[in-house]
Image (cartoon, rainbow, N blue to C red; front, top):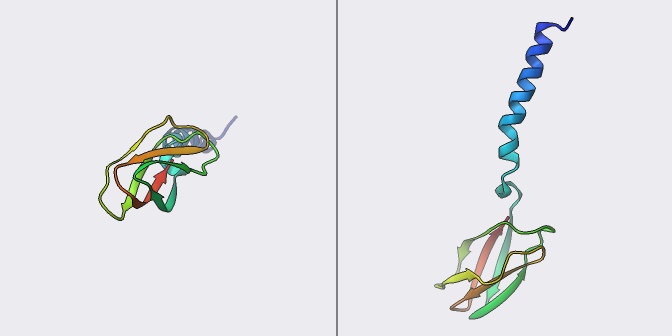
Length: 94
């Protein structure tokens, strides 16, 4: 016969898992910052160094004025950005 304390512990573990799994699965928990990336006026291809398919990106610092957008599908190796000006940026990739 299992002790009531042991049964409660099993319920607690199950509840923790159901609450923590969505947090741990969030791709932002596995992000990386690419620092001082020089973008050209035009297309720049950047190795995102994640070792897996990238799920998203964000400019976290920019040293100038530019409009920047992703101009190729996300893949396992690179992030392709197009800029309307030469600018240096820090990019969070996840």
